[in-house]
Amino acid sequence: MSEGEEQSEDDCPFPLCPRCGEPVLLVTSRGPHDHEANPCGCRVSGNLLE
Ligand SMILES: [Zn+2]
Figure 1: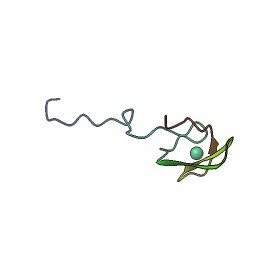
Figure 2 (figure 1 turned 180 degrees about the vertical axis):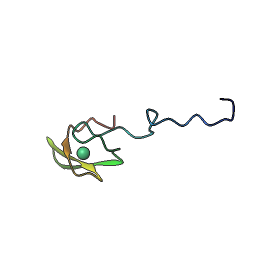
Figure 3 (figure 1 turned 45 degrees about the vertical axis):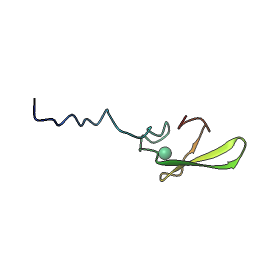
Figure 4 (figure 1 turned 120 degrees about the vertical axis):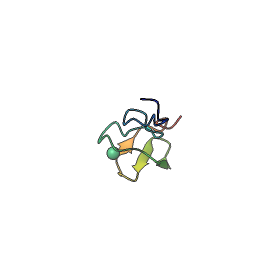
């Protein structure tokens, strides 16, 4: 427990997509109320990464 490995699946550096649970690396905006998570491609709210 003291080997310096603290990686955990619950400690992902990226937010998880609220729709599919995949890590969201990028959110692209198509419009003021139309945002798409990448790479999974789900539509999400624009403040997911904020
Ligand atoms: Zn998704």
